[in-house]
Amino acid sequence: MSIENPPLPSQTLLFPELTTKLVTVNFAGGHVSSDGGGVLLAQVDRSYGYLRRFAACFQDYRDPDLVEHDLEELLRQRVYGLALGYEDLNDHDQLCSDPLLASLCGKQDPLGQDRRRKEDQGKALAGKSTLNRLELTPAEATSACRYKKIVADPIALEDYFIDEWVRSLTRDASEIILDLDRTNDSLYGQQEGRFFHGYYEEYCYTPLYIYAGDWPVVAALHTGDSEHLDEVLRLLAKIVERVRRSRPQVRIVVRGDSGFCRDGLMSWCEANKVKYVLGLAGNAVLLRILRGSLRTAKSMLDFNGSQSERVFRDFRYRAKSWGPAKRRVVGKAEWTTQGANPRFVITNLETEEFVAQALYQELYCARGNMENRIKEKC
Image (cartoon, rainbow, N blue to C red):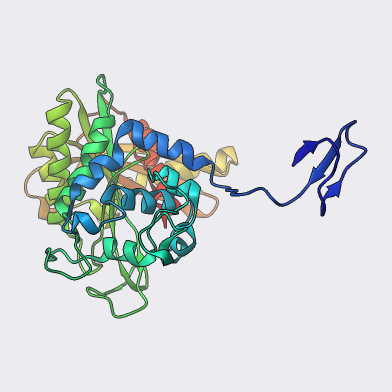
């Protein structure tokens, strides 16, 4: 919209009653974008150097004399596009002509007028085919390959996300909580590692996520046929080593649901002075221990006429497969208008640090925030 003095251009809409000056509307606005937030995104990236360091995780075997889109520009184009809501590579057949995105990616000629080939002029950025080569280059590719020559180092990528998170920790940080969880990534074809998962009732992968607050430290694609405990321990060991190298004073707490309650994980935490609080699946022994507390909760419900009542019990418990050691368990004896709702968590945190109710309600239940972050990305 513009405010002008006469004479008026042709093919305009007039709003003479809005102001003492004539207001005209036309559609000769030039290049217009609704992605103005990308300017802030690019500024943050350049200020912290995220994608500059990310580019070091790739080996570019292309001939520099033939390259029009360098590696960092390709990564910016793809990452900024994802952040702005353009998830599909096909979107870049139009985005390659977007001067705003080209400017954000660092192109000196955002209108693409100086491209070498005439058919590419007006397209400052890479198209979907070039980005496809970036994403789908096999790990064994070399400079002898015809097209796919940008090779990602999977270990370097894994280290990058861990190191960026460690870099974000404040110098006076005293405790970090690592949330572990899995979700289902549905499969509809004959993908490698395809497996029918009974819990999710579908063919799927079960990727592992490790969060620290809102920060995704690890996202690892796993098949659904195993718990992949060795891989979980390897990743935890790497994270703990990085944290203690940079922030030796920090106490580390691992938190997860009953799917991670395995003796191997708990023994590793105990051996490496890492705290844990994990969900524990109920069984006949645990329910028998909690039986009296459940009766108490039911009596409280009947007396108070409330919707639910909770009683917490703190005790030591040992499963046969754990060896001789007993571990601390907190049982939540809850009775609602729908009936009994017992729950259990197991931990190596001492009572002096967290009493039973606070351990369950304030520490363990807070992992629900991490589940919300996973839902946002799935």
